[in-house]
Image (cartoon, rainbow, N blue to C red):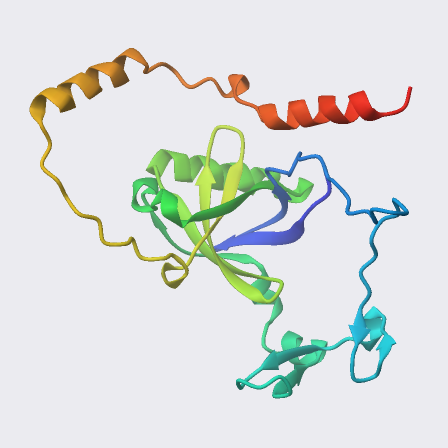
Length: 224
């Protein structure tokens, strides 16, 4: 498993080099788009209509449209983007700690394993155990790519999980919901039904059945 990012955790006099490894991956079967007649894969060209030519990555720059017009762009060079960040922005600098219950599930985007470099294992485990003992998670910020991310560091018995959180302004407001009176007998009946169907969660029993059927369909069509 390759490192997604190399960074470090910083808190007080602790500086712990770590690798951020993606926890999950997309296991879906990839279907390609083909030409109906030739059965060749469809190619997407990078094309400039003004120059009337196909262009390569070296001909492309990043731009921001600052007005409601197709030609109102400011150009951002890599040097411009790099000038507004420092090396300190690219480490997990702990801002404070909080209880995990204070972080709503709505805020969770994606997660990474934090794996210590060899020279940081001792401090890593010290930090992990201290957070577990205090029953807290660490709140940090880090610049990844062109975005500053809000990160919660969750310790467990094996490692520290870095979870990217949405900012408050990135979460849509809940639409207005009308409240209705509940009938006691209906509520009791439904509570009983829920109790009858409540059991311990078994992760291994859940998998993508559609992908299994799709894989079987594909295998059945492969020439023998």
